[in-house]
Length: 113
Length: 115
Image (cartoon, rainbow over all chains, first blue to last red; front, side):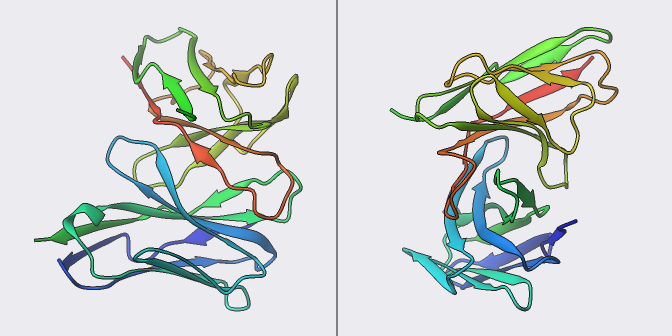
């Protein structure tokens, strides 16, 4: 069974620093990996989706990489801002035909002014 | 605006009651999903539906039931058989279950508390 792990569980950085968030998974047979943002008490907002054939995906200040062979994905957020404070979750989609997502527990990020 | 709506935002249940959580989407998506989120844990799949009048159990379906009579609606009933229902419930949808770049979109969630 696929297991997805996010370490650390919490992270605090000063404004302006680059953020590096880690996601590891045990089964490399994935179709894609999706990164989400969750604000307290809210639903999930999709940030980036990387297909298994891709090495990275970029959107604005966000860049996500995928290394299937090592079972790792990394989300980079450049020049962090207080508005980036949130919980970030990664989820892998397995080889199942119907697209089940397996979630990590998330990394809670605080960006201090 | 296209999106997913969930209601109510907050729901309180007494012991022994069944309650139903609403999920509606106007994205014309075929697939819909229900997840449960507990503090400090990742989301866990309760039920999913690939198409109208069809649904499948996820990892934690015991004590829950669903229906999919319309493409845009996928209500979740939390029955009295669910022993620990207090949690944050999230509904999601995607264009379809197949396709390598299938992306899931989420609603705002319903927080259920047992009194």
